[in-house]
Length: 268
Image (cartoon, rainbow, N blue to C red; front, side, top):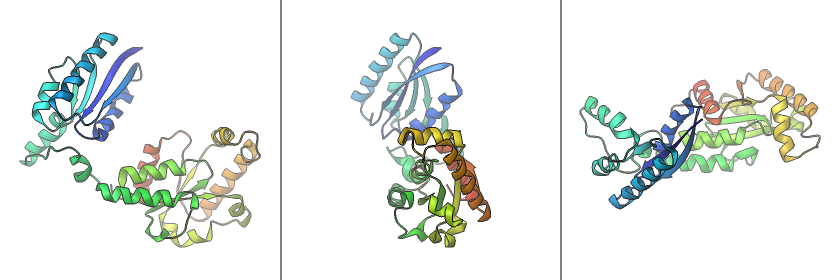
Protein backbone atom coordinates (compact mmCIF):
# COMPACT_ATOMS: atom_id res chain seq x y z
CA UNK A 1 0.00 0.00 0.00
CA UNK A 2 1.28 3.45 -0.91
CA UNK A 3 1.83 6.04 1.79
CA UNK A 4 1.11 9.70 1.14
CA UNK A 5 0.63 12.69 3.40
CA UNK A 6 -2.33 14.97 2.65
CA UNK A 7 -2.29 18.55 3.87
CA UNK A 8 -5.49 20.55 4.26
CA UNK A 9 -4.31 24.15 4.26
CA UNK A 10 -6.72 27.03 4.64
CA UNK A 11 -6.79 30.66 5.71
CA UNK A 12 -9.97 29.87 7.67
CA UNK A 13 -11.30 26.85 9.52
CA UNK A 14 -10.45 24.42 6.73
CA UNK A 15 -13.93 22.95 6.60
CA UNK A 16 -14.28 23.57 2.85
CA UNK A 17 -10.85 22.13 2.10
CA UNK A 18 -11.71 19.19 4.33
CA UNK A 19 -14.85 18.53 2.31
CA UNK A 20 -12.70 18.11 -0.80
CA UNK A 21 -10.87 15.40 1.11
CA UNK A 22 -13.76 13.07 0.21
CA UNK A 23 -11.92 12.70 -3.09
CA UNK A 24 -9.38 10.52 -1.28
CA UNK A 25 -11.97 7.80 -0.72
CA UNK A 26 -11.68 6.91 -4.41
CA UNK A 27 -8.12 5.64 -3.83
CA UNK A 28 -8.34 2.87 -1.21
CA UNK A 29 -4.93 1.42 -2.15
CA UNK A 30 -3.18 4.47 -0.71
CA UNK A 31 -2.71 5.06 3.00
CA UNK A 32 -3.25 8.79 3.53
CA UNK A 33 -1.87 10.54 6.61
CA UNK A 34 -3.92 13.70 7.06
CA UNK A 35 -2.48 16.95 8.37
CA UNK A 36 -4.79 19.91 8.93
CA UNK A 37 -3.41 23.45 8.98
CA UNK A 38 -6.27 25.95 9.46
CA UNK A 39 -5.81 29.73 9.80
CA UNK A 40 -2.70 29.71 7.59
CA UNK A 41 -3.10 33.38 6.76
CA UNK A 42 0.41 34.90 6.88
CA UNK A 43 3.65 34.35 4.98
CA UNK A 44 5.25 33.11 8.19
CA UNK A 45 2.63 30.38 8.50
CA UNK A 46 3.01 29.52 4.82
CA UNK A 47 6.75 29.01 5.39
CA UNK A 48 5.97 26.64 8.27
CA UNK A 49 3.58 24.76 6.01
CA UNK A 50 6.28 24.46 3.36
CA UNK A 51 8.69 23.00 5.90
CA UNK A 52 6.07 20.43 6.91
CA UNK A 53 5.45 19.52 3.27
CA UNK A 54 9.17 19.05 2.65
CA UNK A 55 9.51 16.86 5.75
CA UNK A 56 6.55 14.71 4.71
CA UNK A 57 8.03 14.21 1.24
CA UNK A 58 11.30 13.01 2.76
CA UNK A 59 9.48 10.61 5.07
CA UNK A 60 7.14 9.08 2.48
CA UNK A 61 9.39 9.20 -0.55
CA UNK A 62 6.53 10.66 -2.57
CA UNK A 63 5.04 14.09 -3.13
CA UNK A 64 2.46 15.11 -0.54
CA UNK A 65 -1.02 16.07 -1.69
CA UNK A 66 -2.06 19.59 -0.68
CA UNK A 67 -5.75 20.47 -0.68
CA UNK A 68 -5.81 24.22 -0.23
CA UNK A 69 -8.30 27.01 0.26
CA UNK A 70 -6.33 30.26 0.32
CA UNK A 71 -7.97 33.46 -0.90
CA UNK A 72 -4.79 35.56 -0.93
CA UNK A 73 -3.02 35.04 -4.26
CA UNK A 74 0.43 35.81 -2.81
CA UNK A 75 0.00 33.13 -0.15
CA UNK A 76 -1.26 30.72 -2.78
CA UNK A 77 1.65 31.27 -5.14
CA UNK A 78 4.22 31.09 -2.35
CA UNK A 79 2.85 27.77 -1.07
CA UNK A 80 2.89 26.35 -4.60
CA UNK A 81 6.66 26.70 -4.71
CA UNK A 82 6.72 23.51 -2.65
CA UNK A 83 7.15 20.13 -4.29
CA UNK A 84 3.62 18.76 -3.89
CA UNK A 85 0.51 17.90 -5.83
CA UNK A 86 -1.95 20.76 -5.32
CA UNK A 87 -5.74 20.74 -5.40
CA UNK A 88 -6.52 24.45 -5.30
CA UNK A 89 -10.11 25.39 -4.51
CA UNK A 90 -9.71 28.85 -6.04
CA UNK A 91 -7.76 28.00 -9.21
CA UNK A 92 -9.80 24.89 -9.95
CA UNK A 93 -13.30 26.04 -9.07
CA UNK A 94 -13.79 29.62 -7.96
CA UNK A 95 -11.64 31.61 -10.40
CA UNK A 96 -13.02 29.85 -13.52
CA UNK A 97 -16.55 30.38 -12.24
CA UNK A 98 -15.76 34.07 -11.76
CA UNK A 99 -14.68 34.28 -15.40
CA UNK A 100 -17.88 32.61 -16.52
CA UNK A 101 -20.02 34.97 -14.43
CA UNK A 102 -17.82 37.97 -15.27
CA UNK A 103 -17.49 38.73 -11.56
CA UNK A 104 -14.54 39.02 -9.23
CA UNK A 105 -15.01 36.40 -6.49
CA UNK A 106 -14.79 37.24 -2.81
CA UNK A 107 -11.63 35.81 -1.27
CA UNK A 108 -11.85 36.41 2.49
CA UNK A 109 -11.64 33.58 5.01
CA UNK A 110 -15.03 32.04 5.83
CA UNK A 111 -16.71 33.29 2.64
CA UNK A 112 -17.85 29.79 1.71
CA UNK A 113 -19.87 29.48 4.89
CA UNK A 114 -21.68 32.78 4.47
CA UNK A 115 -22.33 32.64 0.71
CA UNK A 116 -22.79 28.95 -0.04
CA UNK A 117 -25.61 27.21 1.81
CA UNK A 118 -27.15 28.27 5.06
CA UNK A 119 -25.65 31.17 6.99
CA UNK A 120 -23.61 30.49 10.09
CA UNK A 121 -26.19 31.85 12.54
CA UNK A 122 -28.93 29.75 10.95
CA UNK A 123 -26.79 26.64 11.35
CA UNK A 124 -26.08 27.40 14.98
CA UNK A 125 -29.80 27.86 15.60
CA UNK A 126 -30.51 24.55 13.88
CA UNK A 127 -27.83 22.76 15.92
CA UNK A 128 -29.22 24.12 19.19
CA UNK A 129 -32.73 23.08 18.18
CA UNK A 130 -31.56 19.59 17.23
CA UNK A 131 -29.63 19.03 20.44
CA UNK A 132 -32.60 20.22 22.50
CA UNK A 133 -34.93 17.85 20.62
CA UNK A 134 -32.71 14.78 20.71
CA UNK A 135 -34.25 11.46 21.73
CA UNK A 136 -37.70 12.98 22.35
CA UNK A 137 -36.22 15.22 25.04
CA UNK A 138 -38.96 17.83 24.69
CA UNK A 139 -42.10 18.47 22.66
CA UNK A 140 -41.84 22.22 23.06
CA UNK A 141 -41.42 23.99 19.73
CA UNK A 142 -41.75 20.77 17.75
CA UNK A 143 -43.79 22.63 15.15
CA UNK A 144 -40.54 24.37 14.15
CA UNK A 145 -38.91 21.06 13.20
CA UNK A 146 -38.26 20.62 9.50
CA UNK A 147 -37.53 16.90 9.83
CA UNK A 148 -38.42 14.43 12.58
CA UNK A 149 -36.51 11.16 12.56
CA UNK A 150 -37.96 8.07 14.22
CA UNK A 151 -36.71 4.53 14.71
CA UNK A 152 -35.66 2.04 17.35
CA UNK A 153 -33.02 3.00 19.89
CA UNK A 154 -29.43 3.07 18.52
CA UNK A 155 -30.30 3.00 14.83
CA UNK A 156 -28.46 6.25 14.01
CA UNK A 157 -31.06 8.96 14.60
CA UNK A 158 -28.89 11.32 16.68
CA UNK A 159 -25.78 11.50 14.44
CA UNK A 160 -27.96 11.89 11.36
CA UNK A 161 -29.99 14.68 13.00
CA UNK A 162 -26.84 16.53 14.07
CA UNK A 163 -25.33 16.19 10.59
CA UNK A 164 -28.49 17.60 8.99
CA UNK A 165 -28.27 20.59 11.33
CA UNK A 166 -24.55 21.19 10.93
CA UNK A 167 -24.32 20.65 7.18
CA UNK A 168 -27.66 21.97 5.94
CA UNK A 169 -29.05 24.10 8.76
CA UNK A 170 -32.05 21.77 9.06
CA UNK A 171 -33.91 21.79 12.37
CA UNK A 172 -34.12 18.05 12.99
CA UNK A 173 -35.81 16.42 15.96
CA UNK A 174 -35.70 12.70 16.65
CA UNK A 175 -37.86 10.27 18.62
CA UNK A 176 -37.03 6.71 19.64
CA UNK A 177 -39.71 4.08 19.20
CA UNK A 178 -39.90 2.33 22.56
CA UNK A 179 -41.67 -0.74 24.06
CA UNK A 180 -44.65 1.40 25.15
CA UNK A 181 -45.22 2.42 21.51
CA UNK A 182 -44.99 -1.21 20.40
CA UNK A 183 -47.48 -2.36 23.05
CA UNK A 184 -49.87 0.45 22.09
CA UNK A 185 -49.40 -0.28 18.38
CA UNK A 186 -49.11 3.39 17.50
CA UNK A 187 -46.62 6.21 17.17
CA UNK A 188 -46.26 8.66 20.07
CA UNK A 189 -49.39 10.83 20.08
CA UNK A 190 -47.38 14.06 19.73
CA UNK A 191 -46.18 12.93 16.31
CA UNK A 192 -49.60 12.38 14.74
CA UNK A 193 -49.95 15.99 13.62
CA UNK A 194 -46.43 16.04 12.15
CA UNK A 195 -46.58 13.01 9.86
CA UNK A 196 -45.56 15.09 6.83
CA UNK A 197 -42.20 15.85 8.51
CA UNK A 198 -41.40 12.34 9.72
CA UNK A 199 -38.73 10.13 8.17
CA UNK A 200 -37.88 6.71 9.57
CA UNK A 201 -34.60 4.87 10.06
CA UNK A 202 -34.28 1.13 10.36
CA UNK A 203 -31.30 -1.20 10.76
CA UNK A 204 -30.43 -4.87 10.36
CA UNK A 205 -31.02 -6.85 13.61
CA UNK A 206 -27.47 -8.21 13.69
CA UNK A 207 -25.97 -4.74 13.48
CA UNK A 208 -28.36 -3.36 16.12
CA UNK A 209 -27.48 -6.28 18.40
CA UNK A 210 -23.76 -5.48 18.04
CA UNK A 211 -24.26 -1.76 18.72
CA UNK A 212 -26.49 -2.30 21.75
CA UNK A 213 -24.21 -4.97 23.12
CA UNK A 214 -21.40 -2.42 23.32
CA UNK A 215 -23.62 -0.29 25.55
CA UNK A 216 -25.44 -2.91 27.64
CA UNK A 217 -23.75 -6.24 27.10
CA UNK A 218 -25.83 -9.34 27.79
CA UNK A 219 -29.06 -7.41 28.45
CA UNK A 220 -32.52 -8.23 27.11
CA UNK A 221 -32.40 -4.79 25.43
CA UNK A 222 -29.35 -5.90 23.40
CA UNK A 223 -30.46 -9.49 22.70
CA UNK A 224 -30.72 -10.45 19.05
CA UNK A 225 -34.26 -11.77 19.51
CA UNK A 226 -35.44 -8.48 21.04
CA UNK A 227 -33.69 -6.49 18.31
CA UNK A 228 -35.47 -8.51 15.64
CA UNK A 229 -38.88 -8.03 17.29
CA UNK A 230 -38.39 -4.28 17.79
CA UNK A 231 -37.31 -3.72 14.19
CA UNK A 232 -40.22 -5.70 12.73
CA UNK A 233 -42.71 -3.86 14.94
CA UNK A 234 -41.18 -0.46 14.23
CA UNK A 235 -41.27 -1.04 10.47
CA UNK A 236 -44.91 -2.14 10.71
CA UNK A 237 -45.77 1.04 12.64
CA UNK A 238 -44.06 3.19 10.03
CA UNK A 239 -45.68 1.29 7.19
CA UNK A 240 -49.15 1.68 8.71
CA UNK A 241 -48.56 5.44 9.13
CA UNK A 242 -47.32 5.81 5.55
CA UNK A 243 -43.84 6.87 6.66
CA UNK A 244 -40.85 6.42 4.36
CA UNK A 245 -37.72 4.95 5.90
CA UNK A 246 -34.13 4.09 5.02
CA UNK A 247 -31.80 1.37 6.26
CA UNK A 248 -28.85 2.79 8.20
CA UNK A 249 -26.93 -0.49 8.49
CA UNK A 250 -24.24 0.22 5.93
CA UNK A 251 -24.88 3.88 5.17
CA UNK A 252 -22.89 6.85 6.45
CA UNK A 253 -24.63 9.88 7.94
CA UNK A 254 -23.77 11.72 4.73
CA UNK A 255 -25.63 9.15 2.65
CA UNK A 256 -28.59 9.04 5.01
CA UNK A 257 -28.82 12.83 5.07
CA UNK A 258 -28.76 12.99 1.27
CA UNK A 259 -31.60 10.45 1.10
CA UNK A 260 -33.62 12.35 3.70
CA UNK A 261 -33.07 15.69 1.94
CA UNK A 262 -34.12 14.20 -1.40
CA UNK A 263 -37.17 12.35 -0.17
CA UNK A 264 -38.45 15.14 2.02
CA UNK A 265 -37.55 17.73 -0.63
CA UNK A 266 -35.66 19.97 1.79
CA UNK A 267 -33.70 22.74 0.02
CA UNK A 268 -29.91 22.71 0.49
